[in-house]
Length: 268
Image (cartoon, rainbow, N blue to C red; front, side, top):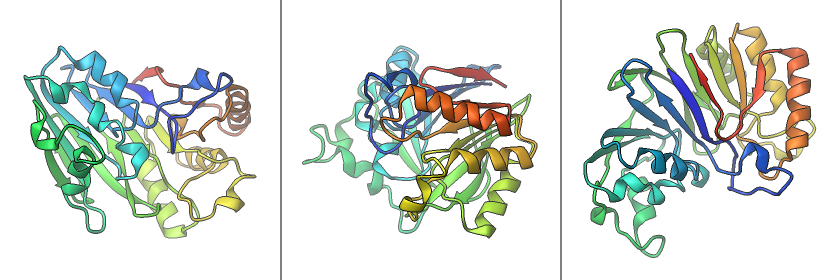
C-alpha cells in the first residue's frame, strides 16, 4: 500500500515563510491499496481539501476514518469536494468516544457554522459509529487502540501485504498502562506515525494538552522494532530549520526517523 501525507500540522493550519516547506495543513493521510487502488482516508483536517481535488473524478466508495472530533481533525470536511458531486458513496467512520453521536459530525455543516446543510449535500455521507475493537473497511483490516488525549482518541493499525502502518496521533505519554498498550500495538509495524507536537523542553508547560514529544516517539520506536518512524502533528509555525534539527536529533537515537511533510508518500 501507499501512504501519502496531505496534512501534518496540529491545532491550526498556520505557517510562515520559514515553515511552509513541511506544509501548513492539519491532519489528513491517504492510504491506497497497491492491488486494487482502493482508498482509505485517515482524518479530515484541512489537508483533506487537497486530497478531495485529486479524487473529484474518481467516483465510488470513499471511507473517511476519524481518530477523534477535535477541530483540527475534522475542519476540512465541509470543503471536501466529493460531497458536492454525484456518483460518490462516502462514509465517515466516527469513533465511539464518551457520548459520541452522529451529530458530532453533522453539526459542523449546520448554520451558523456553514452555509450548506448536511442534508443538502449531493453525495451525503453516511456516518457510522465505531467502537474500540478490530473491524474492516472494504479490504482494509484495522485494529484499534485508545489513546491518552483530552476527550479521547483512537489509534489505528492497518494491515498491509508487506507490513502494517500504525497511525497514533494525539497521544500524551505519561500513563504507564496506556503507554505500554501503545508500545505493544506498535510493535513490529513497518511504519509508525506518531504525535511529536512538542519538544522535550516544551512538554512541562503543556501537561494535559494531550500531545507527545519527538523524544518519546523515538524511544517507543527503538524499543519496539518499528521499521520507520514518522514524526507528525507538528506544532503550528515550527520552522523547517527547527524540523530539520529535530529530525537530526531523533535520527541519532533511531536512524529510521523522518519528519512528515505535506505531499510526501511512501510504500509498504
